[in-house]
Image (cartoon, rainbow, N blue to C red; front, side):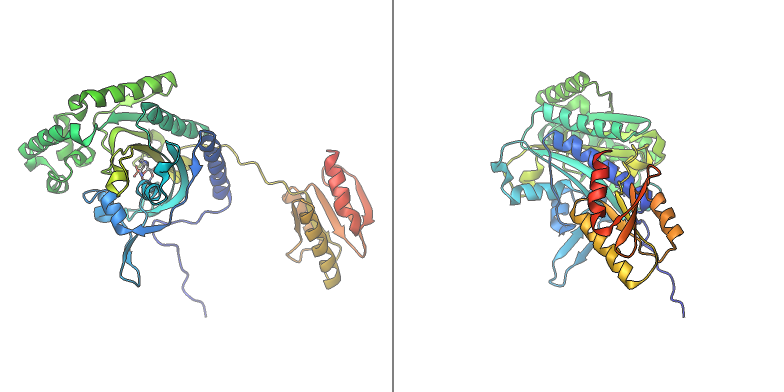
Length: 419
Ligand code: HAM
């Protein structure tokens, strides 16, 4: 009787073979770049109290309104699979009293996130992000450094047709007048707006810049622009971020329609896009969130960071090949049988405790099949275990010698040494 075959849920995927190798390459590049710049790895729980995202990301965002995987635990608490990493990192910053540490506190993560979005190429319901957050400084150099690090990572990952869009949203205070002006403008053109934008005029008027329907887009072309209404200190901050990016030779375009889909942003916002990606062109983005820590119950603390989609980085680039793992010894057997298998297993264990990378025959192959396998695995040496003695073959030469099995590890270590 055969049971129906089960599949991974829609919008999710398995990571196999080649894909896991390129992901490891991305992880080690990210670690080298970010830890080299003083970022420390952080991992937060996969689920958090729903309130963290409602308060942190914002009730009027698409993420909180329609995309969260929210459930009740048996104790009746509302929990949510994390849709993003910034609010959890800020929660951890407050919970662990990190404001008492040397500032800014720089943290990075590589984790999976969950959003119930319409699944398509480059858009998944469980996806991975590499992210970096710097908390505790409003220095524009932190903004420029953060952006530069993502630019460096994307360059190293071979991301094609990359563009950086940059803007500033100002502080909520300097944005307040502008919001009223924009609301009035949107109300004037209410009949041309999508129902979604219309329903958010009061709660989130800036989101109208992100709408995709032609009616709203037409209206937004004539809308007042936030960049023209920022106050002096916001403008100075933005000018300094740009000057520092120029110094670091990171090219960017100012885009005064860039608003981003999360409510916590203030001042600098940015997004890297790749035209090689098609519809889901956002590779990574971020910005400042100077009010978020306080909003989550912590002391007033500025912050800036970004996250980039791992799948999108891999889709948009030609990642550098991951170095193949080296196999120093393959343990083969002259024939099957319990005694030889035990001798082979003993040799495998001895080789590994001596620090060698080693594998043994586990599939019941013929001797010829075992040698083919050792070849395919790129083994440096093969030991064919016999009764007390083994044949040690140097796979890079023609040499082969018959030696007591108890001396194989020593011989491999020596052979290795002379390489
Ligand atoms: P975000 O723009 O929502 O920002 O997501 C960042 C990146 O995650 C996107 O540019 C995209 O590459 C990837 N991404 C988002 N949703 C999906 C999806 N459904 N499938 C595949 N990839 C996806 C944030 O999440 C902010 N926390 C970034 C940030 C950090 N801002 C400040 N600090």
